[in-house]
Image (cartoon, rainbow, N blue to C red):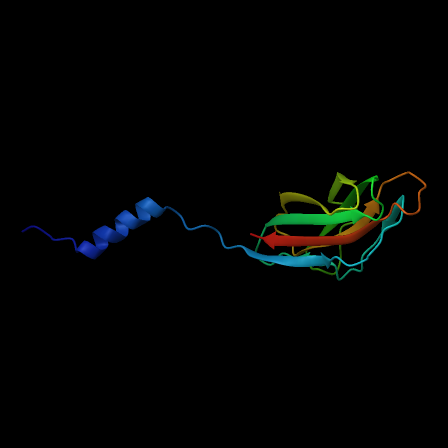
Length: 153
């Protein structure tokens, strides 16, 4: 006796073959810093509070968007920032884990950079510092309107 396979089972198998694996869930974007006039002076490093962190949860990948501008038109600056990792969200590693440099800014319009990275099995990332690496002594050449957004996956 022949066994009949229900049509719905056949359709389900075809859909699985055609669609493949579902995409991993992503959450965000979230604001890490939300802009405003949070100026960083020339050749200066600032340290955000320890509450400026990314709680990783069960995710290991981060998409990052950073934006800023210089105060003075016709100027160029270079921004840098760094992160440390933690397994409990309270104690962070001694050495910097990720340092992003060479974020060039030109003029008084908003400049944006995008990057992504894999964190691994860690609970949190802390934004340790932001830097205005411009070595020009022009005090009006500070960074402002700094905003950092992230997406977890």
